[in-house]
Length: 275
Image 1 (cartoon, rainbow, N blue to C red):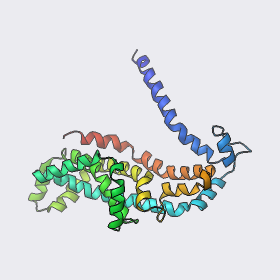
Image 2: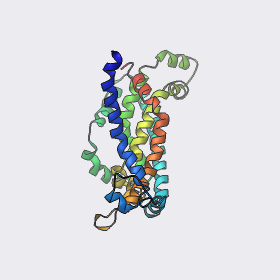
Image 3: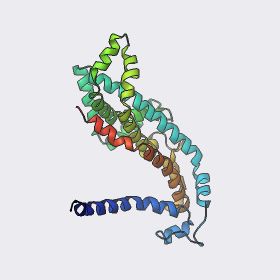
Image 4: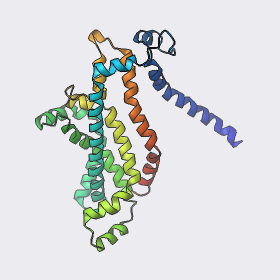
């Protein structure tokens, strides 16, 4: 009887799975078809006539400068995520352990930043980035730290509250400095949540288009910006090369997510123990 009740749930979940995976599968098999066939036979699988092998991948890589864009995206994503993890974990630990009006105000300031839409600040942000000479591949890392700090501090703070303070007190009695306590005692205990924060930030920064476009433009094109190079005059788009580059852009983030996704629920659940 219980099994019969769960059948509708399974049907709904399977339908949602198909719905979400269908666009990815379509992009994948269309990346091996000629661009003329993609427009006229978008749902058809490649056949002897439409199959072009790896031609779309070669054309897309050459036209869009994909290798350079990939390396820039990789550097920005890794550096930004690393800086976010380091700075926000230390900030959350300070806010949680040092109970003052300043730390409480700082915490609510980070929480407030989560609800401010990016569109409200994007023009002033791009102007300030230009004035402060942050409109380059290094400066955008600092900007990502600012935009990623709110959610990251919120998640880290929730998790730090579940860490017994007695462990830190014992380490301080043994002569550890606050920095040593954090990096040798606290930070290793934060693994479930910093893996979660890492996954969320990597997926956001890797796929982000608007912020790099506003700050660094085409001078230091990331993958989402490089894809726009395939758009020709009068709105013409090389759909074959576009599909191929979308596949190449999706593969790293999908592999990364599948490798680490088991930590997401674990980290979120652990961070909700106290707070």
